[in-house]
Length: 344
Ligand code: SF4
Image (cartoon, rainbow, N blue to C red; front, side, top):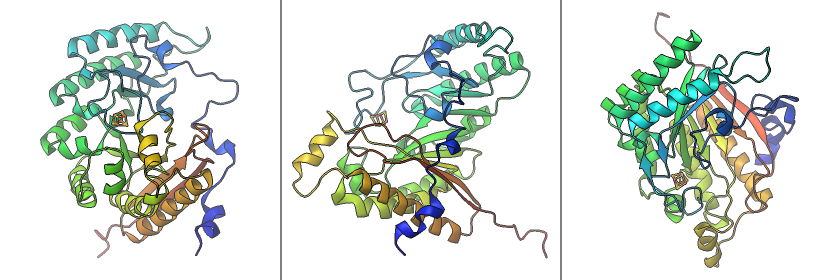
């Protein structure tokens, strides 16, 4: 079956379905820096965390990897983990800012609206485990005391290599402290593509991901995975599709988000252009690639015999005229597997 025959089942371009992501009409969400004056201007916050109910706290400046050929975010910024005492002091000051911030006089303060806590940094799981646990415990206790209820999510960005590198011991402490959602920048499941873009090269990437997942399954950590359609250009498109389906089926995450690449003035652009057999993919090709990945993943996940509840989506189509996501969509893959226990 052609991928396009399943297109209308799969995708919906009606913008109203993104109401959970976009600001409701008439409501202007405050900018993160209005709510935490101690955030660096380049602090990377996923769009779904840019909400009034999220408390931001930055733990890192720059990126500990800083090698990805398509990424300019931290190119001129040195990496450092902020000291725990500095992080705690910023937290206390931000708590006071939010306590005294009201969208309108009759509304709740921004602090009373908080339900989630976002740890800012390019790869939060490279922050030393004991320091991370100390910061989470300190902040969680104070926020929960003030708002009188438990936080629903504590989240941050991380990478495949950091998830692979953390011991079960570390993961146990971090998740027990309450860290329960990792934004995982997978980008591709293909070692060829990852090698091309300098994103850490592991020729046995699929085995690497399997080992990561068999370790993570023991912990209450939900995964939100980012994939870059079009990454690697037209030459690596088959590998990108096949291997990304494989990796995502292994991960079985709660959320998958397709991002756009913005290759302008990057090393990635030069890599693609100097290979005469390669080129950037067109928006139409990027769209077809997303459909093939999503369809292939659905087929694999539904056959896997595992419980599946995964929201696959692309949200932003206005990043760049090259390699852009040409459309937005949202689709849920769901499959509940009944346990045999107690049925005999
Ligand atoms: S790990 Fe993330 S932030 Fe760091 S260079 Fe790569 S894409 Fe950029």
